[in-house]
Picture 1 (spheres, rainbow, N blue to C red):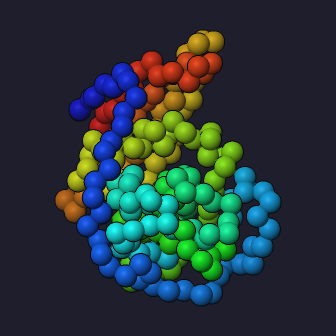
Picture 2 (cartoon, rainbow, N blue to C red; picture 1 turned 180 degrees about the vertical axis):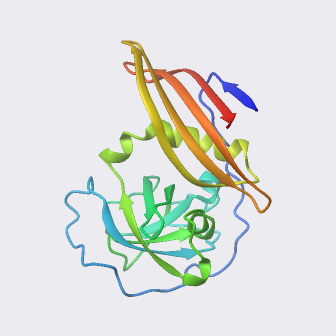
Length: 218
């Protein structure tokens, strides 16, 4: 069993995006459903996701390599903004990933996103499909999972040779008025193996200051 402890906010460096491929690998014009109202983005939106290998330049100025390639392009006239975090759920198998909005494109509704290839694969989707049905969540609902996202970034950096294919919160316990504990389980895959990582963060719910972080293989 392997355990690491972190006692301060963790920041991982961006790396240079090596991809120079054309932006949209699988153009797709048929939208799943007919979502037209963007008034309440707190509710999950069902739609479709395609994939891309990205490019050197984005409208957001955020490289596709940000967040270890867990990135996405969205429509220019949608509620999703540069740098936002979206949770994308593959409706075929229930897998989820958290992605960062790195680019904006014309002609996409709020129910259409273009994932980086690595994020598409992390959803357990075969790239040969080109397009999958998904559920897109943002806004207030994601605020409830901010510690899961924070730990996800640490896990992705600590295990850079693995892809995080799934995660979920397994417990949330308030120890006292000044101490909350949340534990998440992450599934990581490489060509050779699959491992499970349990991440626990202890923080002060009044100040959002971290008390301790623990990662261990289980």
